[in-house]
Length: 186
Image 1 (cartoon, rainbow, N blue to C red):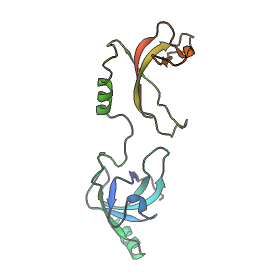
Image 2 (image 1 turned 90 degrees about the vertical axis):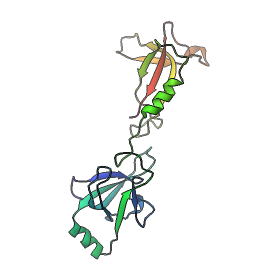
Image 3 (image 1 turned 120 degrees about the vertical axis):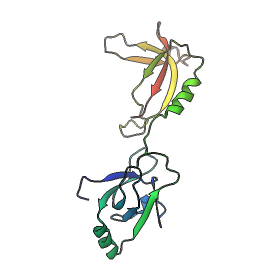
């Protein structure tokens, strides 16, 4: 693939005739979309490299558009041109899954925080990466506790504390306020 004209597609997004998934399509394999789908134009597409990202539930494939004549040339060389369509269980409007909070999930989690006072501070933290890598999946969750600003002059930072810590040394300082922390995606 020698062009910038391509699309990256989650292997679960397309159903490919004769194959278990788009992941099984061989390198330079050809698919045909009868109609536009997920922002991908109708026509023939040649499969390129697999993209495997740490923390993603599935691999994705790079697809490059090719002409009908190029698709016929691949078929003449023994390649099967597979018909493809959106997989029936794919719900994303795009060819890649967007990882992050869904508003409905956030509403349910916030509704469960009925014991928190209305004046609790809402803190949006940087994403936590359990594998300590920028490319690892972010830990998405809502948590509660006590928030205390960093008064050492280090900027607009602070620290969250458990409301009921196990150790005395983890106790929040005087003046810490109730807080809800949103841990977003990367």
